[in-house]
Length: 395
Ligand code: AMP
Image 1 (tube, helix red, strand yellow):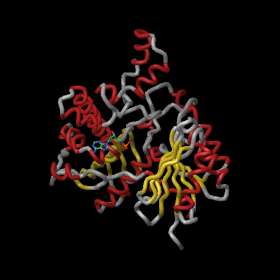
Image 2 (image 1 turned 135 degrees about the vertical axis):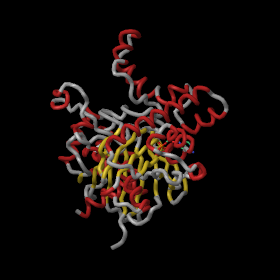
Image 3 (image 1 turned 30 degrees about the horizontal axis):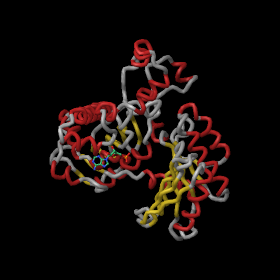
Image 4 (image 1 turned 180 degrees about the vertical axis):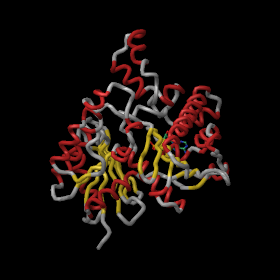
């Protein structure tokens, strides 16, 4: 049988990320981004076998952009496209694993819009468009939340009145599940351990950041909650704050809910603390040149991350290793080093030369000898979505 090709699609409210994944090739032949959809500046940028291409598609919506993207995919796959895997942000309690897409499951995704008002409607738009354009092709939804459906109640319930959970679905869901699942499986593979008999702490540190405790291949706790705002300090998100901050800002500054939402999601985190940037590279550079705000932002980021990892360790029977992934986790030796200085009680210690070498997509083991394993593992959510899609095609 020839090796199969899966198109992986991640639709945002005004963007579509796409990648063509072959089941047997580790490199991605076609990868691209359609952005500013619905505006005069709408455009598609893609790389085919490393070569960059650009197309202006003024005022294109999701469907119009996909109509341009799909022939590129057909072409790159030599006419052998076997299925489409869609990243869907919120699966609620209903979707505990990836599922085949049909009108019923699509309705289920739409119905979860109150839990992810920005993301799920955009994901549904992309699914609808590809189902219309390619009705004969099997399509699968892979949920960011599904991996965390194994959390026990003591980890997923908030200490709030029961009816908010039972009648209004207010609970901790967790996100980045595809990445946590992928890198924990790779960690077990790299360490010669069985995933089903191993325990990991994972720090996914990109623009959004979360930690996860993974036992025997299952998520047991994670730092994000009802929404992706809970937990760590992130690029522009505050992470945890005192819940009374809302009423404090209403009372003292007369702020609206929209203003508070915006401040916590878009003006906080590394950007808010530094007053400079949400980008860790920029902050590291500025800090080395004496920018006090950048230095503080990095220190808060690492301390909060260490506290979260220590908290996640409560869910583990033993520690087989800590995994760093995501743009910051994979590349910032400084963040890894500063974070672990706060975790001496877990006996964690780095081999600094190995830590400095683990950048730009290089996986590696970076702990000092005699100390618990610390791994840097590049995440690959697209590949995991393609693997899930293939598994459902085979089922
Ligand atoms: P992601 O969302 O996974 O692409 O991660 C984005 C974050 O990774 C941004 O904060 C980048 O500044 C950070 N990042 C990427 N490369 C590096 C690097 N070499 N050193 C430090 N941070 C980096």
